[in-house]
Image (cartoon, rainbow, N blue to C red; front, side, top):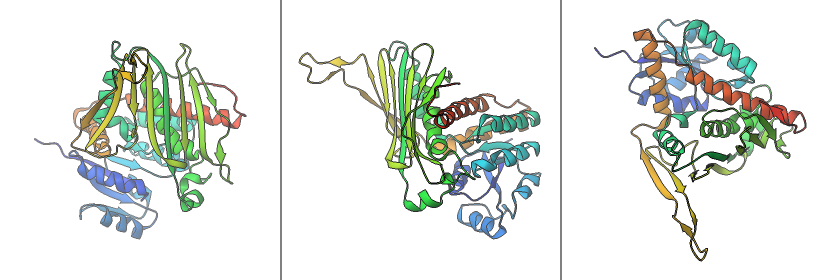
Length: 358
């Protein structure tokens, strides 16, 4: 007998919720069941425009979604400053939690969320989509190959996009009362996650924010950079910005090989993605080229990465609901480590670019 799909409730009508509504529709084991907004009219308009079935529940408050006994899981794309309140409440109401990134304002807040999830036995996952693309697993295979890649030495990550004036003046990501981390939380989260992913989620020993971050008038970060250092000599750097052309690059360098990626956050195309690798490359005899040249690798997928995320989250929720399984602890662990490094970068900036131990 086929299992019933996991019923999702969405809290709020943020732009990113449109993308996840589509993802929930595309995923074979999930369904759009409810949406809540502070305005009933806004919720109804959102449901109508984003593929909700006629039977979907439309609520004029977030509480009503959480109080609906048929909602299995909630996707929470609210501003970061509201995460701790609504995520803890969702967990207390026994709703599995798919939380938009950055997951919290700091590790202390995140721990409150994770403790509530653990206490209620609900699954937690953050909405870092690229982690679920099959390309990511293919790249990890290369990085894990001691002959082809060798020992990790360095990672360079960059995520920037040129926000328009309206964004820079009005978006929630530039308001200290809503998303106080600015570009560090929005774009830097991805850079930090990519660095930790490449290092098998081994936390660095120290973090140092680089001088020259850009702030808006309210003191929110619009661009910043940082370096991470490990005891064994590994190093990593990242740059994130709302003020430069769209760039999503990661370079991972080992003793034998190198991995290059140019669209790590969102692939250039939904149904296929690529990366390049080089192994034991050197110069040609006259130093006029490379030998061997880097090779390009292509990975196809039947579902976009956000739908793959929803499918995996729904699979975990289904295992808990139907099989009595325990929540998968991998995902809250990865979120917490990412938040720890993000906190350290922020602390380094606020402390006058001093070295912070993680």
